[in-house]
Every structure is written in C-alpha cells, then in structure tokens.
Image (cartoon, rainbow, N blue to C red; front, side):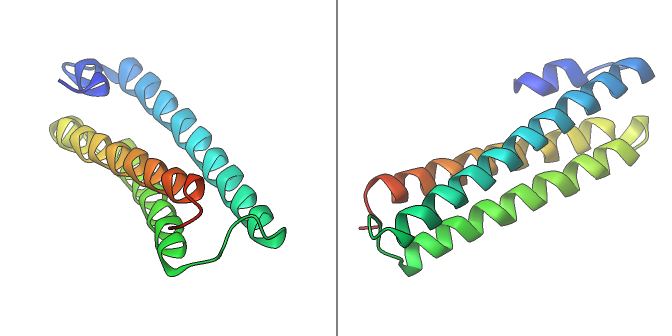
Length: 115
C-alpha cells in the first residue's frame, strides 16, 4: 500500500488536516526542486555545458505539468468530503508518482547532456 494511503484510511478531521499539511509541504518542496533543476539547466545551457534539445524541453515540460497536476489533486483532496477522501488520496499518490518519474527523467536528460 502507498505510504500516504496507509495514513488516509479511517481519518478523522484532525488527521485529514495533518495529511493535507504534509502533502502541501511535499508539494512546496517539489516546486522548489523543480525551480532548482530548471535554473541549473538554464545555467548549463547559457554556459555551453548543455545543448538545448526538444527532448530536454519535453522532459522539463512534463515535470511542470506533473507538478501542476499534483497541486490540483491536492486542492481536490482538501475540498473532498469523507466519501471522496480515499479516492482523492489515490489520485494524489498517482500524481506524486508521475512527478517523481518526471523529475528522474529530467535529471537523466540533464546528466547525459540531452543525448
């Protein structure tokens, strides 16, 4: 079972609030990581250490989209009622997984010089 899903089962209001705060913190950290990676890529391109490419742009865009999706899923979770809570937790977990995958893909593109 996914880590957040274990916490999500049979949650009361206080636990739901705590879960939402933890997820919000994770989203803020992910956004900061995205901004850092984007800045490093832009710096590497500006100094000639990295070639711009369509694959690199696509990887960066995927990371942006997945971060925005995670943010939307978090808002949906925070607005959800008890009946929708677990479904929204699953959607948020899926968004986290997609975001993590896109961060790894972008880091791999950055590391290999976009080959």
